[in-house]
Length: 167
Image (cartoon, rainbow, N blue to C red; front, top):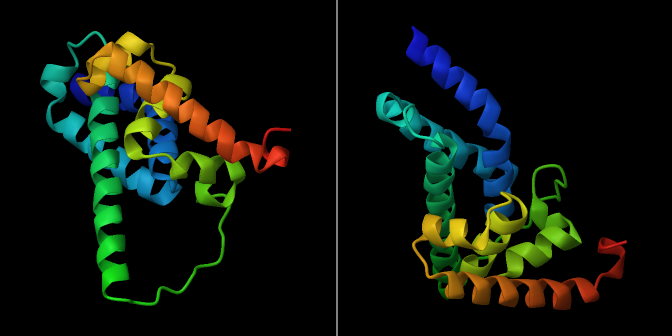
């Protein structure tokens, strides 16, 4: 019973940060909730080992970010296939509470390539250092710095078109 109590406490303490990170990556709260839940389900299955980690939330975040990146890639592939087939997609009504793309900052963030978005989100939302991002993503620190700089530049350019977003 203590094991499940430990996991419950861990889940309550870390879920919000994980969800915020994933939502910034995928741009949709419902999709982020699904991804976060999958990451925590995987953690629960390995909890006997993970509970001994210094930072089990880093493991969950790494899994969640990988799932989010995979989901973004699948979405891009599906969109390309849909466009090739010339399918007409009906636009859904904006839902600002659930979907980041309906805010200027969210739309700008989602316009970034996933590699830039990943490091921007991990740096600014998950509050990770360059070295921590490099370790978590399996990248050299220089690559993280390059992607972060490019992401900042692209965000600045996009947000300059919407000055009300940064006011």
